[in-house]
Image 1 (cartoon, helix red, strand yellow):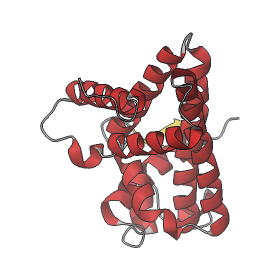
Image 2 (cartoon, rainbow, N blue to C red):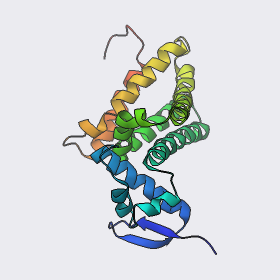
Image 3 (cartoon, rainbow, N blue to C red):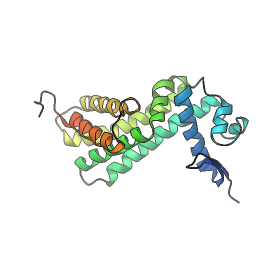
Length: 209
C-alpha cells in the first residue's frame, strides 16, 4: 500500500491521498513562501504545518527541524536547476538554441518562483556549513553549464570573463521579485530574454546597436 500525505490544492484547500514525495514537495513550496514572507526566524513550525494542512510537530516526521527544512528548500532548488540546465543543453541542437533554452528556463523559474530567490539571497547564511557547501557546489555546476555553452559562442573569451558575465546576468534575471512591476508575465519574460542575450553575447568594447 502506498503512503499518502497532505498537500495544497490549486484552491489552497488541503487534500489527502498524494504520495509522500508530493507531500514533501508541498512542504518545501509552503516553506519557501513563508521564509520569504516572514524570514527564517519569523516563520514558526506551527505556521509551516498549517500551510500544508497539518500540525507543526507532524513536520518532524519529514525534517529534523526548521534549519533542516530550510536546507532542503535550498538544496532542492539548486539540484533542480543543475539537473534541468544539463537536460536543456543536451536537447539543444546548437549552442545558440542551448543559450536561448537556458535563458527562457531560468526566466520562467525567476518569474514563477520568486520566493525561492528571496530565501536564497536572505537566508543562505543560516545553513550549517555542510549544507551551505552543498548548495554552493550545485550552483557552481549550474553556472558551468552556462559557461560551457558561452565558450562555444564566444571562443575568444576566457572562462573567467564568461563566468563573470553569467553571474551578472543571473543578477538581472533574479531581480524579478523586485522589478516585475506593471508588465505582464509574457512581456517581462521577453524583455529579460532580450536583455540577457545581449549581455551574454556582447563583446567588451563593442559599439552598442
